[in-house]
Image (cartoon, rainbow over all chains, first blue to last red; front, side, top):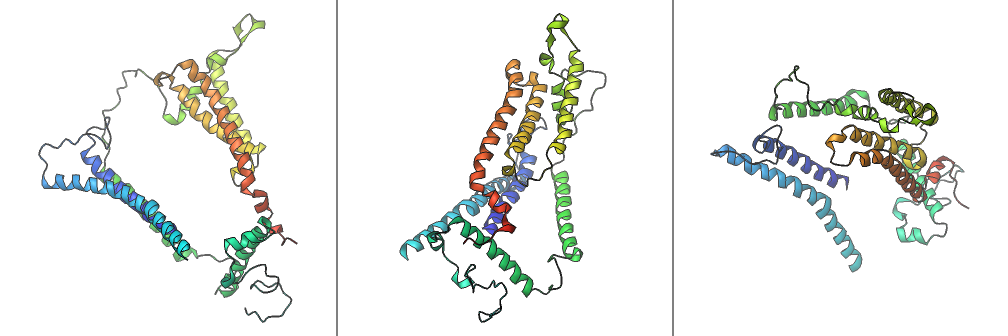
Length: 89
Length: 255
C-alpha cells in the first residue's frame, strides 16, 4: 500500500513539476497577471513550441491520471478482487 | 526456539499460556471477535506480539551485543543526507534556471505608496495596532480615554507576546498528540486562528467585508474554533483509547 502511495505521489510530483515549468514558459504572460493558466501567446509556433505545448498537456494529465490510478483505481480493483474471491470461496 | 523447551522462563514462541499465537496459527479477525474478553485481550495480544517480534529480531541479529539497532552515521546516514541535500539543491537550481522571476522596477523612494503595509508575516502585529475601538472610555474620567489608541495598540502587542511567552510555563508539553490534552489543543487552535484573523483585520481596507463585522469576527472566530476543537478532541478521546496506550508498559494479561 505504501508502494502504491509513493508511485502515485511520484506521478503527481513529476507531472506537476513538468507542467509547472512549461506552463511557466508559455502560459505566464506577465509576472503580475495570470500565472500558469494564462493565454498561450505564441505567434508562429515552431516545432519546439508545438512539442513543448504537447508535453505540457501530457505532463498535466500524467499527474492527474497517475495519482488517480495508483490511489483510487488500483486499490479499488484490489478490493473488488478480494471481495469476489471471498464470495466465491 | 523450539516448542520442546520446558524451562520456566517466559515463553514467547506461542506455546504455554497461548497468549501469542505462532505465525501459522494467527487467528483471523472473526475468530478474534468471538473471544469473550474482547478489546482488552486484543490490545494485550497486539502489544505482546510486537514485543515478541522485537525480541526475535534482537536474537537473530548480528548486533547481539548492542543495545540499539540502528544504522551507522558513516556511510548510511551520510549517504541519505547527501541524497536529500543533492535533491533539494538540484530543485533550487532547476527552478531558478527554468523559471527565473521577473525583476520589477526598483522602488521609488520619493513617493509614498497609497497603502502602507508591513511584510505579510507582521500583519498580526500591525492588526493589533488597530484595536482602537476596544480602548475603553472611562466614565470616571468624563469619557476620556486613559491612554491614546496608539499606546493601547502597542500594549496589545505586549499582552499577546507575553501570553505566548508564558504558555510554556503553564503547560509543560507532556502531551504527544492533541487528543491527550484537548483544552490546550483548543488554546493553541484559537491562537493560530487569532493570528490569521488579526492579520485579516490589519488589511481590512483590502477585504471585501464590513469593517465592523470583520472586527467582531476577529475575536469571535478564534473562540468558535477553540470550542469546535475542544468538542472534537473530547469526542475523539473515546475511540482513541489513549489511556490504554499510555498504560502499555504496565499492561497485564486479563484474567
